[in-house]
Length: 170
Image (cartoon, rainbow, N blue to C red; front, side, top):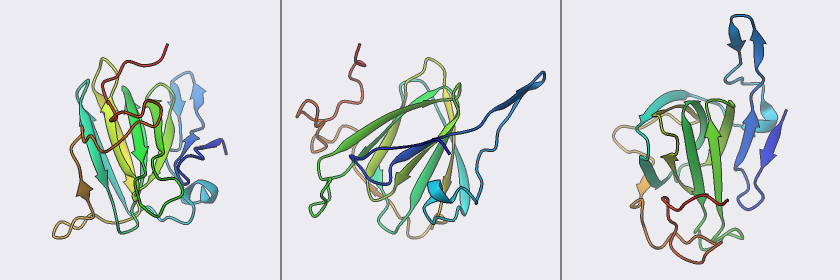
């Protein structure tokens, strides 16, 4: 398995999918329950699809009842961010940014206790399928939300509020 971990926020990681090309195109397994090293004991119980126009930001939210999200970008490119502000956390103030794109299939794993969100960074809409280990409860959703531009989420690189629209590094 080609798993990349992000030590700033334990549990956040990516897994590059294996692509099997042939003259028709390619085949890839999107998710398998025997990817134990990547799943870390989670059992996937629901799959969802999110379609977003260029520049759209969906942030910030977190899950407090143990949900873990596994994102697979099928089309376009998406920036994923995760932030830890738990007062008792050794990782408090850490932030991870990951860009995933349909041209290079990989799964992004984000434990739900981190504040997280996405921005479509491609010039075309993004299509993302994501898998979760807890069923969505319509009557008591496991979601806590903040505004996408919440000034209390600090970019550790600049010491300023996180800016979803900052230009990428060159």
